[in-house]
Length: 277
Length: 251
Image 1 (tube, each protein chain N blue to C red):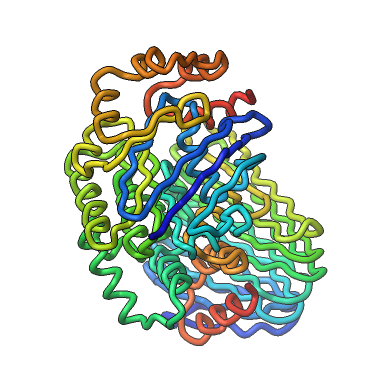
Image 2 (tube, one colour; image 1 turned 45 degrees about the vertical axis):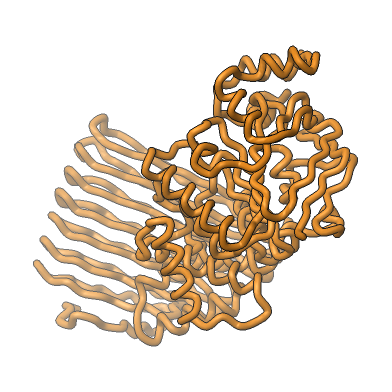
């Protein structure tokens, strides 16, 4: 069974420690809702797993099926079966989407993919995410709307067929129809491949549609609570105060300040970088 | 010399000056390939369109270009510099007539110890004139690139538009690029913009491509290809094939 294990992970961004001994395990066939107040390390965790060089792992382990992920280069992590759908996918002028997809797809298989096979796979995936095929002749994400960029992330997930898919606020900025499309795709991949999912969202709407099998809550850079779907449902109704009270956790001063500075849906790590804190 | 062909390839003798007159309402395409020490003067009459495609492929190249555009004339210049050796290009376009328009797009691959210098200027004199400079360069080894873009909107050139965008990637710390996008504005009622970006490959772009399983070298190639390849769309036939081959070889 494919398993991603995170053990006592410490991660810093520009010398500020964001994750402070985080541990979490995700198995194939699980959909884990990753929750927590802004600025407590959810996006940092996903970026550290994928190997974003901006996020420095100072201590701890990340293992994929027992293999040390931290020793792998970013592209190797992808080929081993990790996938990150970005919160803000970048636009890359001049890089044609179809060329990029073909390169990426080819990297994930030993067999040579013919042009016919590639277009067939891409055509099917484009219909699932409801992005017109012609858009793939344009530069990557260039001129795409916010919703199209997010659906484009899901399309890439479907093409690459990862073992563990990490979705960072895949629903932010999507209208109701687009959320339905994205959730249908996630459910389809889950049903067909039993992919393990680690999903960050600030909205219960997505979770209602994809029905996570587990919840994990990050506060102060650690997973402080794990359990079933009832946790995200309670957080949706009552917020995070009850967790602080039940577990007798106080938010660390600087993080609390960061929480107050950012609005829902904003990555506080970026705020820290921006403000030089 | 008056043009009477829809498309022509100009043959220059070294160190020669040539004149081309594009007649009223005429639409022509001109291809210039590997120019040494030559000068070209273009006169675009009313409502004419000239697509000038310049391709530096081999050895040293240098070209001086002057163009005068009268009312509603359009000059599009597409410049691909993939030559080895030093090269220069000087272009001066005068938008004399109202609603005259000119675009200058270039892609440049600068390698080894080569030095490439481009001076591209537009003078807006007529009303509602437009100019657009857009250039991309990839610089390697100990090469040097110097680009000067000047858009001068003169006093009576009301409702004119000028834009400049220059981007250069430095692959090696020993390569250098200097870009000066300059706007000289002597008229109030106009729109103008200029932008310049010089640096190494964008880390966020690289991380995105790597995160999809693409190896570092291939990711760099994809981004570089994205910088250089768009100019190919403005060429055709054998020149286009040669350009594509050079880009693939270059990256």
